[in-house]
Length: 171
Length: 128
Figure 1 (cartoon, rainbow over the protein chains, first blue to last red):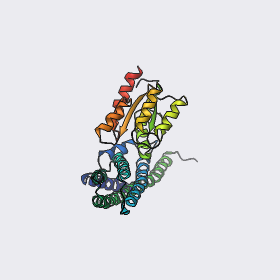
Figure 2: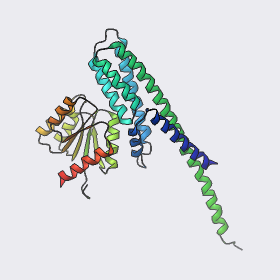
Figure 3: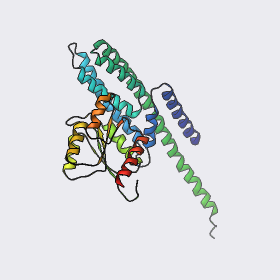
Figure 4: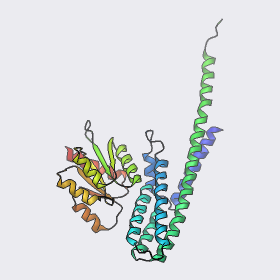
């Protein structure tokens, strides 16, 4: 039963990842992150993604704070924030977010405040979508690891029983 | 990479995410000794303190001292380490200026495994 559960969870993860790749939400850079995860860094992907969430939320707040001001004119500062957001999004393979940043920067380069506001709204939407989906992915992974861990005590018990059956009887 | 030669690398980047990913990439391809600093000035100060690195991965846009200025200063100090620039900037003129500061190569962010392999191949030739 537990074996099936582990396999089912693995299939769920793969299905979710395939969907995110198909939607263009993630690109092959995310696979590269997964390949960097190993025994010495077993939580590498979730740690890096959590850094991304933390930095992104700061950048989104900064961008919104700039645009809320009707007299805003510091497009250079906006460009700096966007470059940072683009760079970090590329680093984790957040392709759709990166693409929105490109469009946002184009509006910013033209000093187009309404265009920037629209782009920011789209950016916030895409970020929320990605964050929810990655949380879902990590939850499934945690369940899979837990299910795989729970299996082992049963296997150990079975092995001990086999050993006892093989021992000779004492008079 | 020649066996027995421990290669030391320095990652210079203000972005925490890039720091983690670049350090992990280097570790994956055998560079076990990697230090990380947050801007060009910290990199220059490390070299001034007597530390040496075979490979420096230098981001372009950083506060305090950017990658171009740091690279120029390191070369003026006589540093001959391999310095590879990385940038998410898409403006060719800015990348060209970064190269002119004294880089051995400049790569787009994010770095890939094949980029690291290419860098290490060049480094191996340089160290021979």
